[in-house]
Image (cartoon, rainbow, N blue to C red; front, side, top):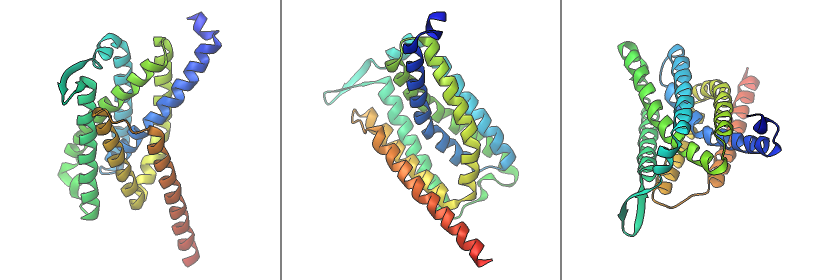
Length: 241
């Protein structure tokens, strides 16, 4: 342990891996923000905390099962000369779930369906939100940890990077969730991001890798444009008063 603390290579690996885990966590934060925007604010805070705590638990549990996790990348069947592993199957299933969920939410926004989190269904909406967060946490955790295993050799470094990244996700998720809930156009943009991320996961599962840099650049560019739109609307309201 002391060797890791005094090793510049270990600190460089920790910094690099932490940065990567934070970037990979953006997908998770966007999904959780969209899901909790449908339930009352008090329950939304609890759902967000539970979701991020589960994300941390899943990542550490997967890291502790390295042998099993590496085995998920072994081929289990072949289809049209392409070999598919359990990882590919999970990515395809998770991607399809994201696409279906985002499409359903977009339909709800367009049709102005706000009844999902009201009245007697509030409790069931809370548990349904938690269930969806658990499903997508598992998908994102799997992809994130397999990436971590490929970048670092020491379990301590991987666990430290995951814990730091989850703390950053926890700190940023509150403001992101409130911003998404307060700005309907931003929520629609976030749902479009989820469709894009879902397509990327499905493509990865089918051995067609879409460089994540392209996706994150598109997200960053669109978010910057939306930020200026929100700023412009705020200034117009101030001028109207």
